Image (cartoon, rainbow, N blue to C red; front, top):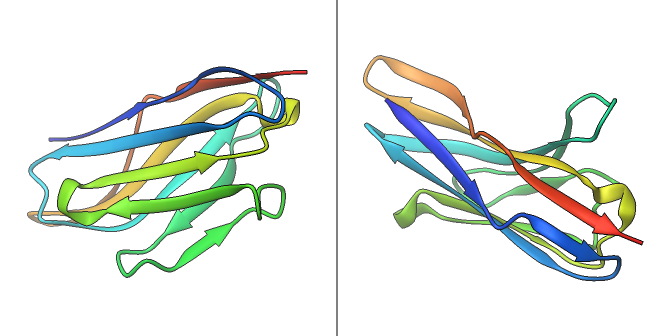
Length: 119
């Protein structure tokens, strides 16, 4: 059993910053790619950023230059530093991980954390 638990969401004014964390726990052999997605009300879930086990990153155009994804492999944790937040960043943020367990590798998702940016 593998669990991903997010933390760090909340309410912030436009221009402010938040740092999200997501810790994976359970019967983990290793973790390949990790990422953050978000879903705003009435919209589809969209990719925000991903990071490989080697540290290569990829960002959605809408967050480039404002958000930074990082990970601590020793802690099985991925972070999302969000700066210069905008009202349009308001969404539920979900972390994801491709986790290698006995029998193969599988996609796991966290339960989501709300980020609200006020104007």
